[in-house]
Image 1 (tube, rainbow, N blue to C red):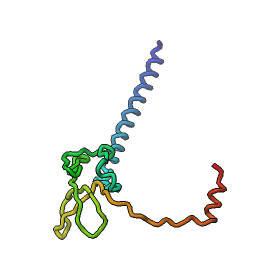
Image 2 (cartoon, one colour; image 1 turned 120 degrees about the vertical axis):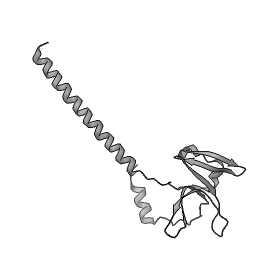
Image 3 (cartoon, one colour; image 1 turned 90 degrees about the horizontal axis):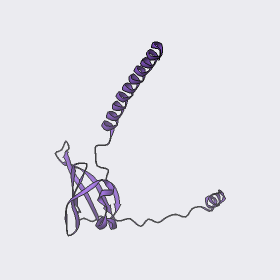
Image 4 (spheres, rainbow, N blue to C red; image 1 turned 90 degrees about the vertical axis):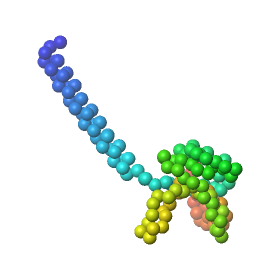
Length: 141
């Protein structure tokens, strides 16, 4: 192998190494930025009340820490514990898992919800107008 060829290879390898190093630094900055912009609060998943008894907590990356005769009582999600609540009031029956995240300016506790299990309201669905129905039927599959 000629000295000139070896020099070309060495120069090329250095350039590749430099590009890889710069790419790694850029990827690290992107990862840090994404992590910083990720939502920090619980998502408040909306689920049907009928699902509560058999809900697969692993499907939302949560773990049941404590349960009782009524089901999950305390669950952990992303290292935070959420407690089961079910208020007695005039509104629709509901079970939710929440945690206190601090106080507001008036000194009232603020909460975030991991998930809410509630009854699905029976909503009257309006029929699709005939003009739209004909259009839908005319679209080839």
